[in-house]
Length: 174
Image 1 (tube, one colour):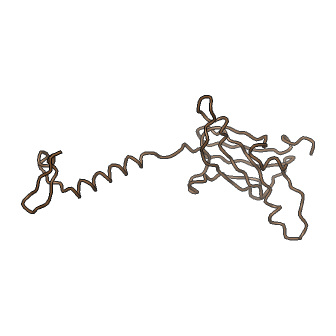
Image 2: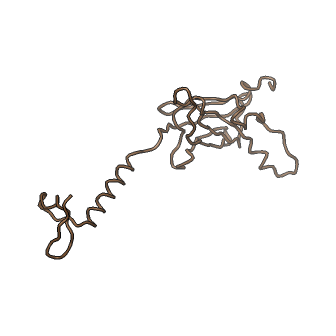
Image 3: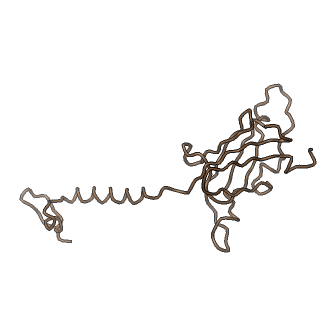
């Protein structure tokens, strides 16, 4: 690239004269940074689908259950090797047992990444106990551990309702 100087002592890039305009080196650098920023901004991140549902036991809604969808590395596309990565999504059930997932890296995004997820459940009522007695957990202790939880769901394109009935997972409690 040819570098020239104009009468004001400013350096111009040689190709700028061909286009009929004068571009200083600083202007060219600023333009390059804008273009790089636009290219980098084109990556909108992972595909997210809205996920909501209800957590129940024996048909009764459970409030204060933290629901976490964690991308399953064993089921992510990557050939023979598991693909590590992806961010979890979290929701907390309300009084009707309903949850709405929020994506970890951007709380304004509701849902979870597309693909298979291990789902863990944590009974928050144990933490919010005020009477001094620790109540018995309404969920199985193994459901808090991503390596042991029996819950696995695939998030696909489009809005999804994923209801979780705990008696289906733990029939001895019926």
